[in-house]
Length: 508
Ligand SMILES: Nc1nc2c(c(=O)[nH]1)N[C@H]1C(S)=C(S)[C@@H](COP(=O)(O)OP(=O)(O)OC[C@H]3O[C@@H](n4cnc5c(N)ncnc54)[C@H](O)[C@@H]3O)O[C@H]1N2
Ligand code: MOO
Image 1: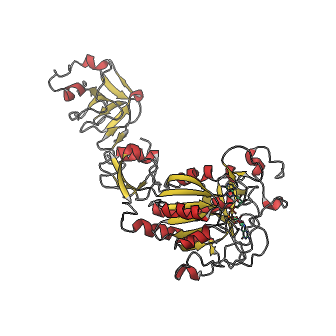
Image 2: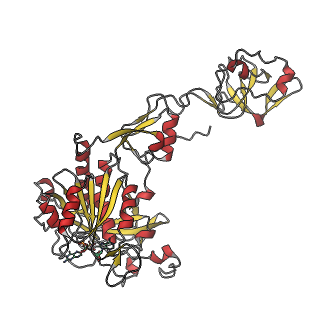
Image 3: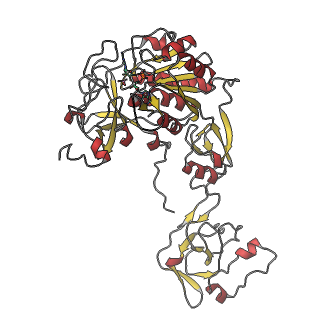
């Protein structure tokens, strides 16, 4: 089957290899030399990314925003700078500009927040020896004489004790129920009905499931299969002891984490404050409704960026359209009270590309000014005089996604106190051509444990990323069939903290 044959539906249509689509437009990768770039050099033999050249700017004083550099920061280094800058802002003392970074929130409001301290168990789990099944608690070897139900007696001491008439025990009685007080000890040779989740009476040695037991005409209970000491009893603290660390600080509160926290005794959680973001969408050519007309196009970034940022753990205060007007942009940037101001468009050097001059006027420090990555190379990261951050995303939509994942994601992750997802690599199914000097980020889907790059990966195109599982990191020079590529998952596919236990299974 050829790549063309597979183009049968939305995904298959965008699923095909560059190598087999030589005519596909791909403005972002080219094969052209970009003499403006120093970057990390061509791919070393074997398809590995060469060691990034040391970036003198990263260690030396940062250029002012008006001083245009002619060196793009290598992709991995740009991400590291963004992560570092977010971390130092997150650990800076609180000021009027930057309120406290942590707060206690009730469990029901904590979903999607990040733990600001490790989640330590407030109780043993389970907190008492528990029956794992409906059946009989037994003591010692069988057959057992059946003890009458004592539940009501234990819970309601004023009421008369249950009858000891053995015949009464042959009619189903509730026995020991979940949620009831401790039962009295179970003498050797006796059994008592018990429900799943109920407390095991002292001296009981096992639970026999109701379907594996029968009573004879004398009222004695027999097990129909061998009884193993401790079977179907969940011993106290089987899952954790009080004080055990269940999750690290930085874990995202998922629905499962909410359940775990509740089980472990929490009513509220100490969480990191979500970083706030103002999104400024620049461009006089943008329409917010209807069809493109008269050289105007639809704003594709306004609807996309805010939910994407929320998936990255941010609180988006506002998404505003700002005209191609340097004064309006200056005001919007300097008046924002968000932790991060994110602009789209206007990062290049066109007549109405105001981001650089406005940052210079605002006295901002450029931490990253251009990244050796395609698409998205004009992206930038700046620190304003107020200490707030600004990420400038290029206007081309896939270039903006590249900027989101390269600069905004690591910055927001460390600002919000999240633990990083462990980086992972996967083999690429076929050859992918590369940029001679720059890293490429290419939308892909997972197929049979391999990464399959998608068509429609040009800087202005969203058709590939809309069906992608993530972006594959293609080193300068490209990748050969089977090369392991770093994978950037899309945030909706990679929310949960993956620090799961890999202990042996527990089936009761
Ligand atoms: N002389 C050069 N020109 C350009 C270079 C360069 O190196 N030298 N780089 C190109 C690259 S690469 C990119 S990426 C863009 C980045 O440009 P800007 O960040 O200044 O963005 P704009 O010029 O405002 O827009 C670029 C493109 O994207 C469209 N756009 C903008 N905003 C939106 C939106 N919200 N929704 C949909 N489309 C949007 C805009 O109409 C333009 O077509 O610069 C190249 N130029
Ligand atoms: O090649 Mo640009 O950085 O359109 O992405």
